[in-house]
Amino acid sequence: MIAALGTATLLGATACASPDAASGPESSDTASATPSGSITVYNAQHEELTQAWADEFTQETGVTVVLRNGDDSELGNQLVQEGSASKADVFLTENSPAISLVDNADLLAPVDADTLAQVPEQFQPSTGTWTGIAARSTVFAYNPSLLGDAELPASLLDLADPAWKGRWAASPSGADFQAIVSALLELKGEKATSAWLAAMKDNAVVYKGNSTVMKAVNAGEIPGGVIYHYYWFGDQAGTGENSSTTKMHYFKNQDPGAFVSVSGGGVLKTSANPVAAQAFLAFVTGKSGQEILKTGTSFEYPVSAGVDANPALMPLSELEAPAIDPSHLNSTKVTELMTQAGFL
Figure (cartoon, rainbow, N blue to C red):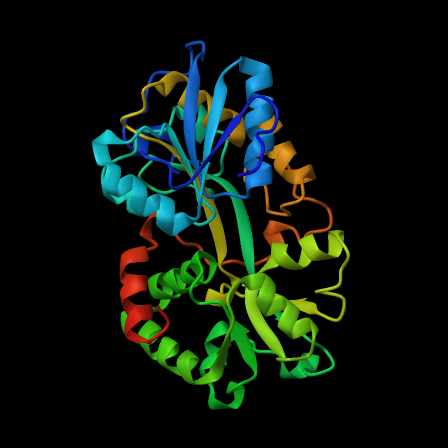
C-alpha cells in the first residue's frame, strides 16, 4: 500500500465494501449546492491522474476524496455485486464498457446538466447517466526495421489475413483490448467479430499488458502490435527505452482500428453525498480538471470543450475515428466471444 498524497485517502480496490440534458434522463439538482464532507471514488483510471484531480478538488472545496483503485473489470463487477449496498459515490474508468456495465444495472444517477454541457456529445452516452472524462486512441505500434510503411495494415480487419500470422501482438486479457473488440462488435456485428477473433487466435502473439507488447515490438521480437497511443508517448517522455525503435500507425478512415475509447465518470444512485459527488465530476470534466489531464503524464486526450490535447499528440480531429455511442459497447458479449475464441 502506498502512502496517500495531499488530503485524499487511498484504499485498496479489495476493501469491503451526450445529447443535451433534455434528450436523456432528468438531470439531478445538485449544481447550485455547496459541496462538503467526503466522497469515495472507485477509480480505474490512472492513479496518478486521479490523485491529482482529488488533491486539487480537495484544495478548492475542502471535500475529502477517498480513492479505491483497481481495474475496469474488477471495480465494475464489484459495483454490480454491491448494488444498493455500495459505499461508492463516483466511478471512474479507463474504458467505457465497465461503466456501461454499471449503468445497465441501473446503478447510476443522471449527470448534472451543467456537467454534460462541458463535454461534446461524441464523448457522452445517449443515456445521460455518465460522461466522458478522457479519451485514448487505438494505434498499431510497429518496428520499421521489420515492417516497411508499404506493408502496414490499412485496417484492423487486415490482421485476420494469414499473411499476418506470427507478425502482430496484442494483450487480449486487458480491458483496453477488450474495449477495442467491443467497438469492432458494434461496428461490424457478432458474426464478423467472431470470425476476426478466430483469425486472431491463429495469427496474433499474445502478451500480458500493452507495455509488454510495445516492449516486444521495440526489441524486434514481433513486427507490430495493437495498443493505445499513450503507452508510446508515456515511454517517450521517460527514458524511451521501450519505444526508441518503434513508430505508431494510425488506421484512420473510420476504421474499427481508429476507435477512440472514452474513459467514463458517473455518480452512483446510492451516493451518500450526491452534491459533492456531482461537484467532483463537474470538476474533472471542467477546465481545471482537464488542464491537469493535459499537462500530466497519462498522455490521454482531454474531452472537454475548450481544452486542447497535449501538443505532442495527433489532434483528435485528425484521427478520423468511427462514431460510436459509448453506451452501446457491450462488455458482457465481448467477454463471451473472447472466451469462445480462447483468449479468456
